[in-house]
View 1: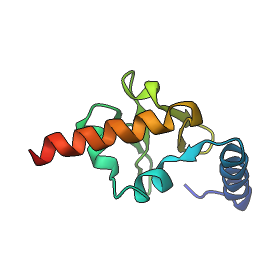
View 2: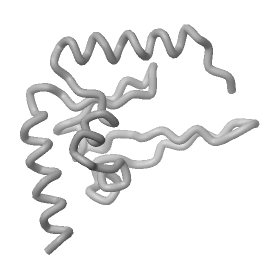
View 3: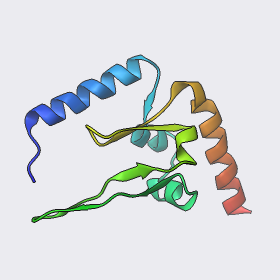
Length: 103
């Protein structure tokens, strides 16, 4: 499966628009907090939504019911955003989860 330049242009435009509105793209949000996607799997906030095709597997993350409290997924562009209205609470949740893991 080959993704077109228009796909990547649309994806970038969506990130810019959502960030201008105050939302956070998940990868950037986690990177700034030294977080990892696999931690969200362990916390039950994401699950694997793998699509197999003739040349490769596309690994996509699906937001679970628990994850929808903080996260929105854009299926069209395979992006997940942390909603601005819960970003502080989500960061605190991740911090508590990390502290429990350390203890």
